[in-house]
Length: 235
Ligand SMILES: Nc1ncnc2c1ncn2[C@@H]1O[C@H](COP(=O)(O)OP(=O)(O)OP(=O)(O)O)[C@@H](O)[C@H]1O
Ligand SMILES: [Mg+2]
Image (tube, rainbow, N blue to C red; front, side, top):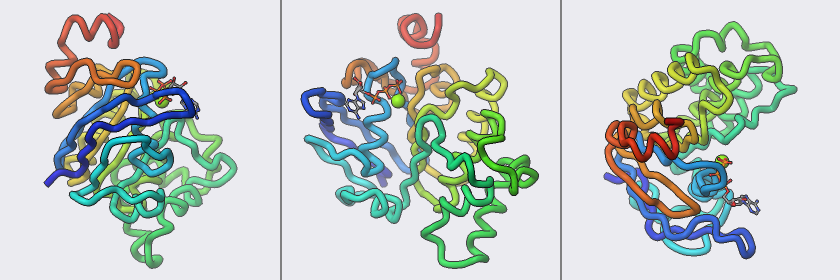
């Protein structure tokens, strides 16, 4: 079954045509990456799939059903977005940020179980629980942003530049975690600007330029493509 099916998606901001007819499937259990430079329209695609920005044309299906219009309805269908630049509540503690992601959950036991799952992925967060999120390192903030999204128990996780601003060793660690999250049964759609590692772990990749896909293929193939390396992957 397809987790996501995007067909001929268009998005406008006023007269700016940011996404110009993009189509792609995401099969259940896949990692799919969209790679593109600044302003290509990566975040716009993510915001549209999360129900934050309305499309101006085309169709999106989530698990075979037309996507609902409101963000909370999209979350209820099992999709969660980790936004670009984390967007944590910096004055709130790690625990409070995690609870924000769990607003759909019925009760305390369920929430504690979801938190335990996050600590299995990111043990450091347990030690930081009562610390304000604004005081965490960049890597820890990204772990928290991913964990907050996982607190809703998503079947589909959208990651918008999860390695932005992170040191190379942390980039590697984030990608290993993304692969592990997928191995545990979550479908992943990710956008990245610095993309070699993202493509390496992706079943498929798409190169986005000014709102259209210019190339696609198996992630590792794209990661090795000399033309793509020159244009997007820093040589
Ligand atoms: N709220 C907005 N209002 C008007 N134009 C916008 C808005 N958000 C984005 N844009 C424009 O839409 C285009 C795509 O932007 P988007 O943020 O989706 O790109 P991106 O690929 O995520 O870039 P980056 O790598 O910088 O995050 C750009 O030309 C941008 O200036
Ligand atoms: Mg962006």
